[in-house]
Image 1 (tube, rainbow, N blue to C red):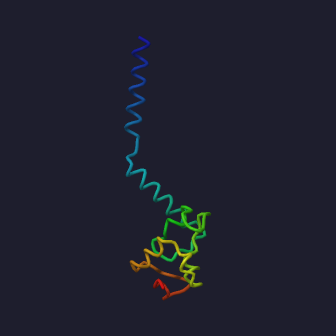
Image 2 (cartoon, one colour):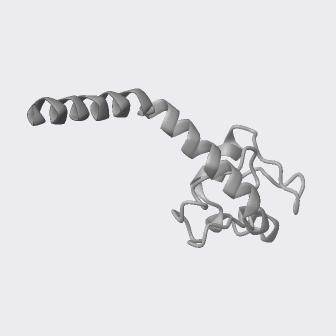
Image 3 (cartoon, rainbow, N blue to C red):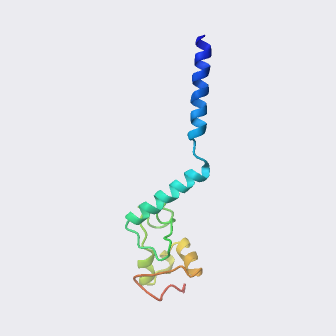
Length: 106
């Protein structure tokens, strides 16, 4: 009898877990949405729209979740502009606030 009860509990737990488990795509969308929200709250001076994620993730010279690619464009420091922003510039997504009209890569 105890074995039957244990099996029923295990089955109910597994069914509940399977029903409530988000798909990969649902979890991915939640994570992207949260990241976009956090980027909006950070000290983010990105030059493309939508903003890059490379700087936020610490995969460029700013490792604290900030971005200053727009400031680097204004200074003419093209080597300090992250590859994601450079790619956005090539697609015409640059909207530099600090240096309007300077989004063409030199």
